[in-house]
Image 1: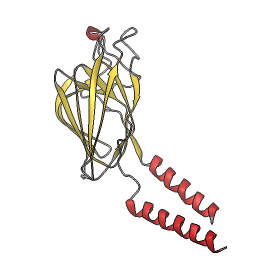
Image 2 (image 1 turned 120 degrees about the horizontal axis):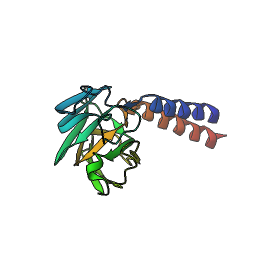
Image 3 (image 1 turned 60 degrees about the vertical axis):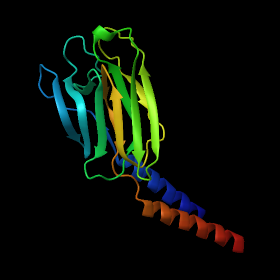
Length: 193
């Protein structure tokens, strides 16, 4: 029975990981310009607010090997939701300096998540302001506790965001309920033996 329970736990973990999507903001809106947008959708995730969809191959832009990113202008704001309104999780994000004009200036960006039970989770991230030659200077950050979310509000300025790891289809609550029942039966069986 223990082997069966371990197998089910492994399956559910793999199911959770397999459903993760990487939002890359590809392709950029046009080959030679940034584009201010009020909404953008990728992999079932909807982004709305005041932000740019940017081509990182423009001169003096930080980049990380891909060409598209979301870019927060002065007083930039974004709301992240699953397109169908369902719950989702955020895991990791890459953030970089907006351009060499802001080299040496640390910038902050805040993520505030609202969960399905109306509780909130918040994390403020700071980028270092250090740019190499204007390229490959994105920093990776882990978002802690951003699960079972209905929406995430993001605010920051002069920061580029890319490679946002999202789990848009979390393991259904029924699967966890089934697993807890199975574990309870295992414990009851062991007590009888």
